[in-house]
Length: 412
Ligand code: RAT
Ligand code: ZN
Image (cartoon, rainbow, N blue to C red; front, side):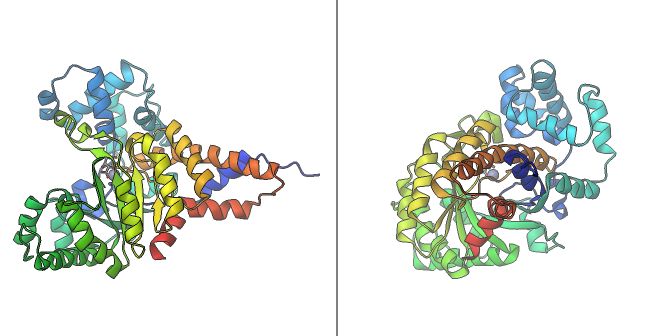
């Protein structure tokens, strides 16, 4: 009689072989030139590591920001890898990346690592990383308000079809006085006040950019005190412009809830924090707008359970990802198990949030490991309940979880 393969082996193999559609990153199509980040220095100055670095070194903030990228990377390398063990998740990530390339950081100093990366051809690195990480497509974060990326969209370029677009509108919703002025500059007849003309012009702006970038969905990150309905510009713009736009274009609206921007501005991109969201706002949005589809990820651990229960109540809500401060193995395991136990497979466990190409390797290898543990436990429980789990069913579930379900939800 054939000996049954252990469940963990079956699950891990299927996870490894199933390509992932990465639904939220900060990576760019290579056509964006300098916005396309890769290599050891970009890996080391990742803002997750910058905030950890400042806990260990005494470099004044101004001096750090005035230094070159290579010098910043050296400070971080010394503080987090040489003078202390690199146990944090973001540090471990670098080790996973180097190992995947066959590099031993114990045998090489930063100079040797730099030379190795410098000798690689960017186009080949892209193929190599996508192959190692088994990533089939990458969704970018595209903001018309970003002065570096906007001109390229306006000029047009040959797109790499593996890089999908998402329309990011934080400035529009969070800083209406300034963004209304920008819209005026770009030829939209808006006023700072709330008028019908302004609403239809904002909708024209959203439609233009949706078409221009072929946006799969629209997205915003919001602070813990976001309220809906409310007498705020944010709530007004969502109700009058974003939601009607979503219905007209069949476009989902992704909400990233709970970020406190600039808690320590001296840390720049690394200076944002977290707070508990009032999820009544999300409940109201889902209840009042059954014809809109909402995607949600919440930043605080404390908000996870409530978000999952809301998804049980509203079929127009799809939870995704373990975002930023929850993208650590212990929290991914907790959140994914919670979601599996309350939602079955109707959610998307993870997105990478990668900013540097090489990060795809570690973000996906670490997340696949955790997802493997969670699924193995669940399938083992099913077998114990007398339900024989077949490989083709595991494959079906994993395909859904690694982006297939997200796509289906958006097309519904
Ligand atoms: O995780 C991150 O890199 C954060 O800086 C944010 O960009 C966040 O993911 C976001 O999309 O706002
Ligand atoms: Zn992000």
